[in-house]
Length: 112
Image (cartoon, rainbow, N blue to C red; front, top):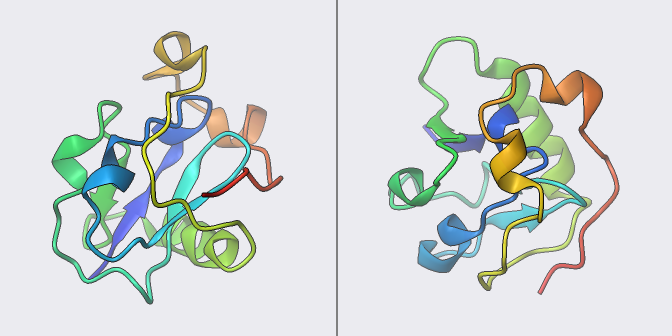
């Protein structure tokens, strides 16, 4: 089992989860985070820290595509190990459906 970041992180990018991760397995895109499934130790401390409830265990049904996306981008985006402010529009986009198709950016973040 591993944890994955899902669509509600897109255009929000809260980083409370990054601050508590004991293994620094979060990677930063321009407008979302992902978890490297090979580095995640399945401790679960990140899940309750996400204000957008975008982190889920991969054992939940329907998350195969999110596991694939997290695996794909965690090897090309920079590692993020410190908390940052969320995106300015985070509150406006929290809970909006369909963000993968309309808002997802494959561009890397700054990392750090």
